[in-house]
Length: 539
Image (cartoon, rainbow, N blue to C red; front, side):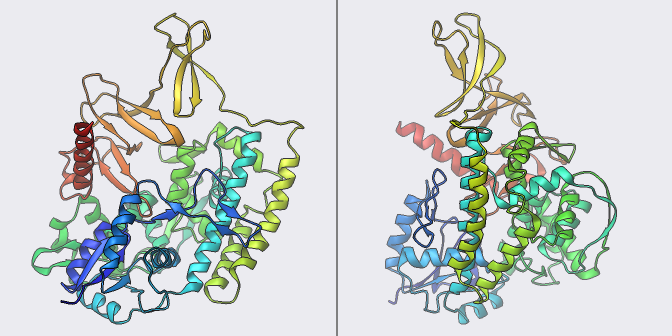
């Protein structure tokens, strides 16, 4: 019996749908995103050796990688059906390198919609990898890494250790600080990913990350019982369309979560009936105002906006108050440190110019190394000027020690908030006489979805946060970040679950909320709890 052909994809949802569409002669496996990446703790790029990058197995992906290496050895033929963009092509190339697939073979499957007929055509038209797209993605990846790593080095002296900002985030931060949006604006009549995010922000009050996540889910597909598995929209990075107008929102409602249904109903109406292009703004930095400012600057932002905004919030450079973004004191320090040294590197014009050079690589009109070198030569000169501006003998600054209202239970002195190897902690100010320390749990505004008590946040090593309830009788704990806006259906706290290499998932923390019906997070949380209990039992 001939070995089955194996199709590799980047998400479990896509694998599930694709398996049902391509038949028993294929097996489909998910890698759960990237398997290797450059370490965050160091540059990992040899600028003297043609910008050679050192990729390491991503923490937690080791078992997946070993399993896939065994499975691929037994496969008759290996096909790769990652997303049809530059990142998907780069990911496909990573699979080729890891599993010994010839990139010149017809191994690359491009499918912009998940229906039985579209998948059949895509499999028949498998092509070799487009190495121009691979080079284009890597050029951007390497430049982004070099810029953010060196800015982090400069900030460790100028502000304090642990702060950094990349090309897109630096530009985004400056736009938020300067935004002046008043009047009426027009947007493109094509329903692109960017247009959808703008309209969903206006009409559904969905954040960009929420729209991006839900779009990915509508694309990856569902099991419609008698009709089988199918996606509802075409690949949501280009011009968005329906896979079938016969799948009306009402006909698929029972298979979708509330938010999935709301967005699909919205898209269906936009595609079949058209949409208004007039948007009015009132001069504040909302998601929509920032998106339209990026449009005005001709920035291609749809793929990076939600990730960039979440990063600025996580790093506490901005904060959201009633859906309006404001620069924090730390954000002002970042802008001040960049001002006068990196104005050209992080301007909208520089961002667009580099994007144009990356596009030339994708079209075979420019060489990857030359494009990287041209940007880095300019950037490195500005970096050297910034470093030279530091006072003589400048030392790396640590996060300032903050006096808290907490009292040491051993000696009655005030406790200090400090940052250590394993994250934030409280230490007695009466050191060395008193050496008392304890974990630091920061009170946050959100309420526990389990008991309604006050939630707390604990910052651990590497900046990772854990969340829990301060009520000693409640055992609620999660790694998922609680969002400011509560669930519109039940009023409980909403969380965001992040994956490696793919879109995040937003869900209500109340297990009994109607929005949790058929929600894919249910299985994910159940699996997480099962693994946690299994680990405890072994211990």
